[in-house]
Image (cartoon, rainbow, N blue to C red; front, side, top):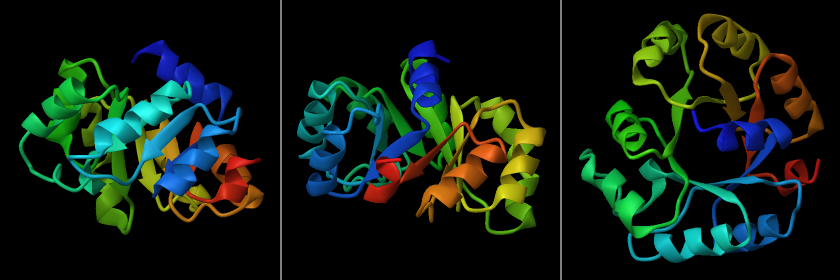
Length: 189
């Protein structure tokens, strides 16, 4: 993994996950936010959205599965992000996208929804995909986070339903390296 992404997450364990331009503009004013997860946009707007965040000095990750027009299962959409934006990396649930992004030297976050024991059973298989981070959702499950951290060497992020300081502390205490949150209150912790 590129040390710059790892260091930014370590230095600032709250990642702003943004769902619209208003949230983006707000998080760009916060010095403690070094990494931004873009959860909105479309094929026509994503380059401008990324540019706005990059110009503010942020590390920018695009959630490929949430950008309108990029939901194809073909790896060519990762090439599009690499060639057409200044994004630092991607977030996705698709292992093939992670592999392609790594080939292109983009940062990678594999998003994993832990909804039952079957989802947990596949954690060890992520070692072969080699994402820079795993993002576990929902992130308000300290026992599950602890279990995953003990299962894999891939650094873990906790996301989803992180609403307050107590949630952040619980996730970090359980072994998450950072949390991603859409909550403006959490961004200011």
